[in-house]
Image 1 (cartoon, helix red, strand yellow):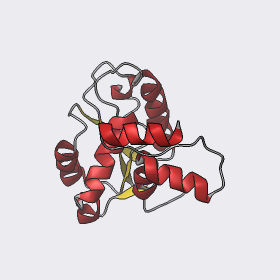
Image 2 (tube, helix red, strand yellow):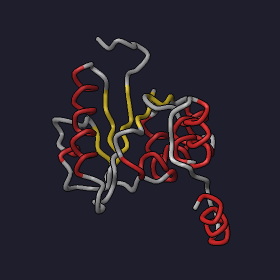
Image 3 (cartoon, helix red, strand yellow):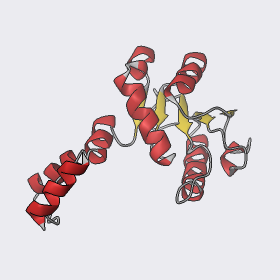
Length: 163
């Protein structure tokens, strides 16, 4: 019996196509996530276009959609499957970006889908270099001198200022 009885079905976003420096570690962590959810009696739906991943094994994922991990395709899956929740943390940058866009576009709210794990606001704060720097300074975590630069000229100015 699940600890959170309101969670009956969860979508897990995979990392998509294999990329240098990203995929194998998410394949393993995502498969462990699917296994843990299944052991809790929670129905799982995987969105991952990578057919070569262990995650697509029917013993792990209840349903598999071999679709791109984009807001448009994931919304189609959400509309069809009507999950209670979604997990963004097991698909690397691809899944994080998709989750942020699903939230910004109001798709998660529209279908009543809760994010399990790292909240979208926290993902946004850590992805924005300047917000992250400010958060670390506010928490008195030592960080190297830094500033964000949006243009080449910004970067040149920051380089002159910081050294």
